[in-house]
Length: 334
Image 1 (cartoon, rainbow, N blue to C red):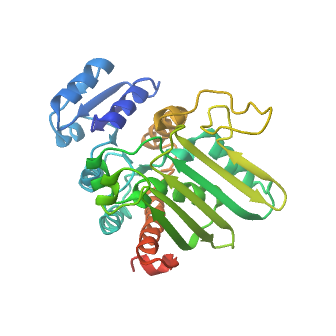
Image 2 (cartoon, rainbow, N blue to C red; image 1 turned 45 degrees about the vertical axis):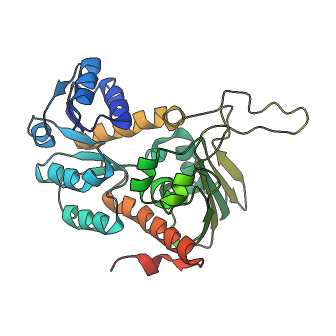
Image 3 (cartoon, rainbow, N blue to C red; image 1 turned 180 degrees about the vertical axis):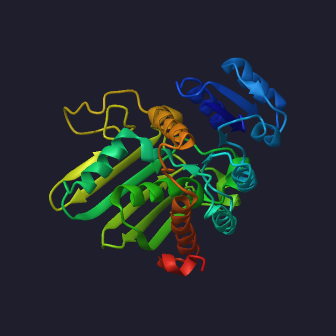
């Protein structure tokens, strides 16, 4: 099949490399506002270059990957759907929840699939955890812990446009908790502070946060996030039930150092970048998208799915601002 890519920054170029290695993909058509970025990627992967998103969508493509700036996501998703082209779009759907709701309303009932990029759903560890929960191996769940710690904060310009740590970073934890447990969040309580880069505080954001989520079956989920983790990129999940407990990310590249006498685990070089931690997941995610394009499976992460994680992020943002518990129904649009 023939796939278009809109946006050839860090993640777009990474997707181009992944797609160029998939057997199902025969050719790529690329576009980026910075012509040099598109040209460099095209030369590297033997792809074609178009001068606009409209030209990509008109180039006889079977599907399109949207890796452009967040502000462009809504218009590009709708352009693809209106052109009848299946779309994969990196999260978030839009910069604000209101824009995301507008996109959902615009694509509902259409027969053109849209897949939103929550790559943890395709990581082998998280898949195994979900399978264990669905099979009842843990018994009734009582506690979930989910962690995302970045080795260093992104640039100031990125922070200013991110919408805040809950919408930008924690939302991955929110989505994967829903997906692994099969349960919805009903209430949140969030805290946060600034422990490092001053430009994050100046943007009105926190760089280190914690959130306590209550799921609809009474399970408690504890979320830890930070922009500062000197040992590396740390993504983990623990699930504790009445019958068993399991962990995702408990492997030799875990960026954690044990101080127990005689313990050598973890012994590997710590993960230091999200692309390193989730290389296989990204490949599985885009492979799934080619199956969506081929019509052999439905979207594994719809706009509606992404919006559910977004409501949790909105509730946590409000909770942090007002120092109180917030129920999801309080922020959900009618």
